Amino acid sequence: MKYIGPFLRISSINKDSILSELFHLSKESLKHIVLNSKCGIAIPLEDLKDNSFSNNDINIIKEFSPLLCLYKKADSKLIDEYGNLVWNGEKFKKEVNSTSNAFMTLALLELLDYYNSFETICKDKYMYYKLYMSMCKNQLLFYASYLRNAEGVFVDKLDTTETFSENIVFEDKNKKFKFSDQALFMAAYYKYSCYGDKYSEDFKKFSLDILNMFLDFKEDLYTLSLEELNKICFGLNAFYNYSKDENAKLLLLDVCDLLVNKYQNTTFEELKKPIEDKSLLFINLTFINGFMPVIKFQELSDRIFSDLIKLYDENLGIFYYSSDDKKISFSSFDIVLYLMCLLIQCTLKDSKDYQAMLYNIFKYQLVNSGVILSWPEAPNLDDVERYKNFSLKSEDLLEEQYFIMPNISTPENTQYAPIFVKNIDFNKKKECFKQKKVSFYSETNMCIFFMLLYIHKFVKDNED
Image (cartoon, rainbow, N blue to C red; front, side):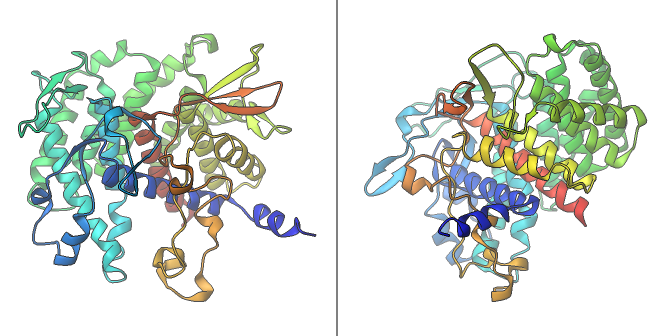
């Protein structure tokens, strides 16, 4: 009889609780990284202050080290410093990756509406709206000044600033630029402009300048790889979602058409990242079909999803490509994208056919595999986030399963940051996962956190 309780708790997990847990993980892990990790250049406190912050807000902000930009890599193992667990600053790799920084700011922007909803409910929560707005503004101003090359496009940089120097010194890490990064920054600048402050018009104009760059150099996109086109398409999808710009819509359809043709003329063996490529293409096609149904896009979307679910092994509760190798390697991005495809399909098709698959992938391949090193603790019972509609009413109390999984402990207990590792291995003979390197890679994590937040909103909008 002692097993009945845990079994009932586990079996009550459903699509809504999984979505809620992933939102909590993304929101709190992002908060931990951007405010407490010091893994990058911090924003001076005086640059955050303005008339919107109260004295109490300023006192809270003093406890944080808000990031102006994020470094590429760090040690995920937390160290003890004067009784507090902190990131090891000696292990930071001081490269500044454009992709990860664009995703970091986009993720913060995605949380603005959520925290803004606390204005009349909880002032302490609403403070994060003001803080994240100020952070995003400072980050976007910094990116425009420091993350572009002589031609004006965003590129990766190397932080060569001397210790204790007041002047930030960056060098170009790579002369080549990625169109996909430009698309992400375009989306970020436009998204911020929608909130209406003194920077909005300049940011909007800057964003549309990037769009014009895409229109002027559209022919150059034809030479790009399938992987890069897929990422460009995702960035354009986000930009169009924020802007509803007609030129962006036409460009997005052209790029998607090019992407589909390239995909259809690429053999499976030629796909460098088959699960990522297929999953991201499915997500891109789903977004496009949401605002302009195109029959060939819809048909391809259905075929891709059919291909993806064929990878699922019902006995193991995981997905994988058959291989003669003893070990199968998965990226954390593969696992998250596959899970997102299932969440989207369960929402749009309103089908229970994939519920068991969704639960098993979430439990065995995401939670139990070791791909996540720790999980932020659930809100306390007196926290408004613990209740439906933030009501604080006892009948609206959400169970812990809407925030955490008991299989993964908190950062305080594990002494590891709440992050995704880059890759894990699955041993087919032993039927178990094994972690590989447990370092923090900013591009992997920022991309995942933004994807989870963005698709959380997409699912919620399509449930209403």
